[in-house]
Length: 126
Image 1: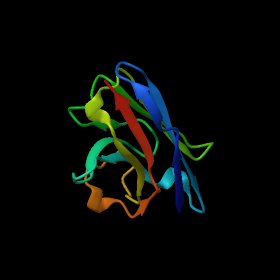
Image 2: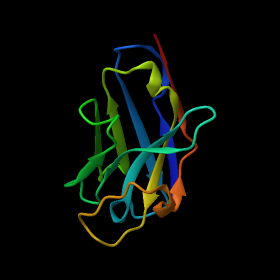
Image 3: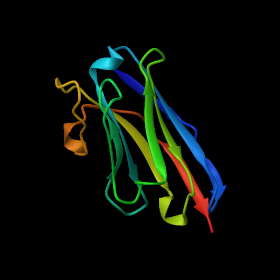
């Protein structure tokens, strides 16, 4: 499956952004989807994940209460709504697909994801 993420940009602290990731070439609803991010000089870190059906979600502590992950299986798209952005949210955001079997499972481990998009850059100025 091929993933393409977009929606990043330069925003000010407190602003909102919605990232989108469109999948092609695979059976989208068979994948757990996740968002990860990588800031300059840092390792890739987990942000949010959503189960195949969308019934289960899980967030990092930094994303919880500010970010919302959702998916539209009819459109082969996963979203990340980011509110109240902070300068420490500045990073390149990557979407990933995990071909897990369990319907309601989620995954916060990057090693479980077999497919990755190219990332979209989010820069939050103070």
